[in-house]
Length: 284
Image (cartoon, rainbow, N blue to C red; front, side, top):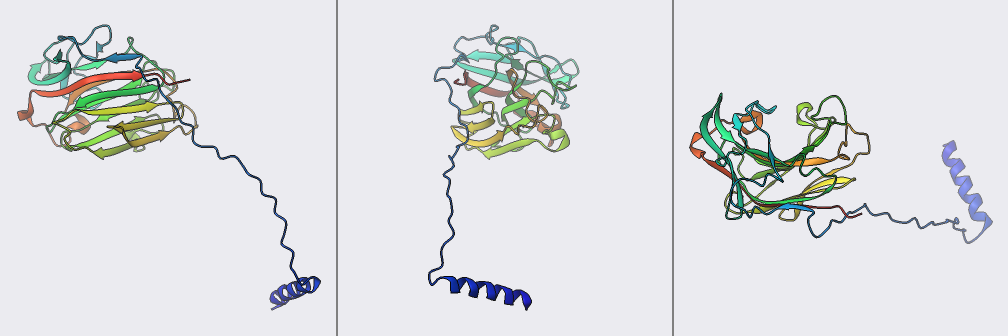
């Protein structure tokens, strides 16, 4: 009651001072609106492969990761080196082909081609036009890894990975884009990823793209964005993406993810086809 009385007294006192209450003076300061930083890219690629010459991939642009180590994922294929059966160009299309055949202790061969040491770059727009193979057990990918080990004690995930495209055959038409870092990766359940469902994914070519800048990584399919990872500004553990990376393209078989529902051996030979891949520089 005392509190109410005091409020009433205060109001009555104020109203007695003037018939017209004076509105408080407010100083309004117009602060500038700062939009999120956006980047642009060159209109002509500084590096590209249009796959115009039949035969093996261009040795001046591509090398190979080889072997059947499982590649950290318990994969089943043996990656070969310069084997035209597993990686060949014909009629303007690069085909990475997985074959059911014995190679060492593996029941399958395939290819993983890389630009490391031939095209290592910092930032850019990376775009590939590709057709995804169907079939339970396959795991095609277009992605990037660090070209050096500058951070932490482990090459992966400390130095980062950017996945432009991943698809697992048992989940048809669901496309994945992701980043992996020491702080954000699937091993500890913190991976930053997004998915989208794509029609005609195994019968038509589609464009898969990543825009990599100092402030964000964004992924697109057919120019429609479906993933963004913003630089948290929290150190290399969260954002190691300020060092050069290189491109990898491969068709894995089985593994911790791709083989979760087994491998259908009737799908072979299985073909991952790429029409072109282009890298556009980030504008200053």
